[in-house]
Amino acid sequence: MRTYKLTAFEKTGKMIADETFTAETDEQAKERGQEILKEKDLEDKTHRLASPAGKLLLFHV
Image (cartoon, rainbow, N blue to C red; front, side, top):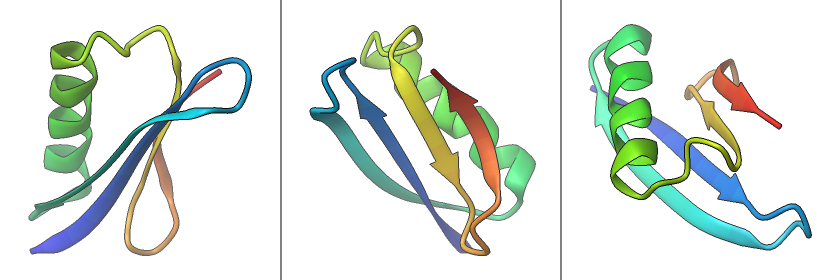
């Protein structure tokens, strides 16, 4: 399992979400990241999901 980091921000730069979770693949992590964003109603907020290698899997401004 690999550890992924999901963060979301207000337009002001204030962090409103900081989630860490594990997944077996980048694709599974991307799906889980999208689920978390939807659950917290953060899909339209600035957000990013980074892999352990620093690769951006999700990014929205």
